[in-house]
Amino acid sequence: MVSKEILTLQFGHYANFVGTHWWNIQESSFQYDSAAPSEIDHNVLFREGITPAGQVTFTPRLLLVDLKNSLKTLPIQGDLYEELPDPSQLFMKWEGHKIELQEAPRESKNAFQTDINNASALPTVATKKYNLEQDVQVWSDFLYSRFHPRTVNVIKQYQHCNAETPFDSYSLGAALWKSEVFEDRFSDDIRRYVEECDHFQGFHILTDCTNGFAGLSSACLEHIRDEYDRKSVLVLPTIPAHFPDNDFQTAHEQVYSLMNDSTRVINLLLSFNTYREFSSMFVPLCTSEAGWRQPGLPRQFHHTQYNHKLPYHSSAFLAAALDTISLKYRLESSTFSLSDLCADLTANDRKAAAGSLCMPFSLNADADLIDCLDQWEGPLYKSITPRCSIGTERVMQHLMLRGVPETRLKKPPNKAGKQKAMAAYNCKSVKDMLELFLACSTYATASHVSTISEAMSTKNPFPDLFDDRIGVHGNVSAIPRLEHTRVESVPILAGLHSGSEIGQMFESLHTEAKKLKIARFNQFTLEADEYEDALNSVMTLRENYEDSFLV
Image: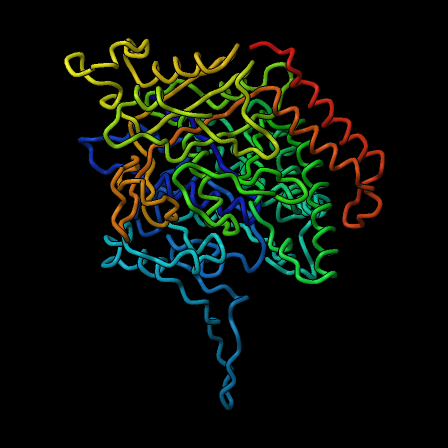
């Protein structure tokens, strides 16, 4: 099977949290046993290379962007290649008549980063107890993957977490793209990656959409559409589950927070309008329910316990969903492509889809899938798209179930008992049984299901999100898991959906954005009529999701 390569672009700090988990998950699923090859084609998102010393490397096909001071101990050039000292990190030491240049000391690495660079400690990393909830301050603190030297790009004009010069508006990001660093060098790096591919199929753009990266990713998207018009582009705008400025203590901080809330709404409106025009499809993602002015209440997932204020936690759910649903076009056996997925979900000028997740997929340790589905109460999955539920009528949807092998489908005839009386007992595969369940629980809905037997790895540095009812291999157990024992893998169901509920999402964003007067926000170089055009475009998109559409 020919690999159809995809280039991933990541813009912004929270998007890089999601991306870091995503690359870590993929690396943890690499199979080195030729007798048990993986079902996943890792060449779709990874590239093979070679160092100057002749060492073969396998690194993400990735370009990422973040602000200054967001990398901590990660060198901009990565650490696969011999690194030359960065002149900006040198300082002068005065000793009598001599001036000596020395490299400035870097921050010390946390225990996890120290161990993955220590050959003797590496075998214990997957199961060792770390304190990453306290140690992780930026995404590179839990990065396991190693990057190509061209991968990391730092915006030096703005600093991470600097309130004096915030990179907070769409206009700042759009203007930044026109600088030499991006319009020339970054676009050249895109071209180099594309030219390395034999069967390039398109792009993933994983991006923050509530700050300046909304404008930067939008400008990059316009460039991609100009240069690679026939390639598919899936945009994945991410919204954190919590904004620290919402934890205000004083009246001044409250005013500051309210202004930030309004700025985020404008960024969302402008970026969604651009994604609507230039992407093949976009899927807004957030683990909280509201997502516009403030993220709102965190969504609850079965058998999980997480701190929604930690980006390290909330981003793990989004990464698990992306890794799972993208398997639709990353399997060794698949003839399905990214363009097929986008085409299925964007008929009738619909440009957005909603994401869903069920992690872990709650299968009892001693049960079969037929019993699990028969006893299931409520929806199979939770929406991970803000202000959007997943409908059960007139929906086009693609779902991927991983980690439920065919051996868990049903009991053999001589032991089936009550299972024999169920219509689902005639199903011959996990795929057929899940499609039958969805056909019985939805109306006028087209459900395209794919499955693989491999569960998703949840070993370090994936956070320990699961309650003690989840066993080591991700199934629900009546016996609590032993304390300090990690869940090593879990079955997951994830999906993308196109239905009338997405129209309600756009209507709610329009309602929030229409309340604002763009002239009051000096950081946006936008005329009132341009803002009004963006409002009208989002409402036009909302009308494409009217319930009169039939699958």
